[in-house]
Length: 229
Image: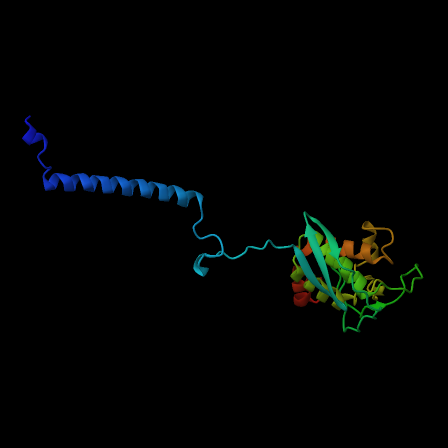
């Protein structure tokens, strides 16, 4: 090759091809770097992110359920099949059950006379637990069984009709207590103090409802349909 050939200018098409390859190489490098940054850094994070890209704050449900009881509400915090009451329960003065045209008899009996708030047979007790106290305990027991607050509402309606939530409500058929067990002595399976203790009566009543109707709303529906549960 002579000197004239060595110093001859590169033809224009060759220069354009070389420049194009260079531009493509640079673009490929920049694209690779950009992809790497996007995969490791959120470009929409921070205060400068547009509202369209801002994600809503997800708040974990607390698990606290609100149950309406006589005289107010009680909050029940369910945690891993256990429960605790948030805040002091509402306590109301004892209220005599309203007179009904008929009364349920849990355990398969038919309705007869209205439930009355009387002393337990053989017990001589005249004190009946305030409705708010009994319903607070029942709300906690309902939550512990995994039932929703709506089930407690059905329970309130059911036992208000049955006994007015009186621990000593009874009728001529032999039905007795808050759940109107027939006969009342059935509740001895839950405790020997069944004649006077609202907790024993509620525990037995919820067990009976669960075994017979699945839930308080199931028992309430049956009571509405057949006038007993």
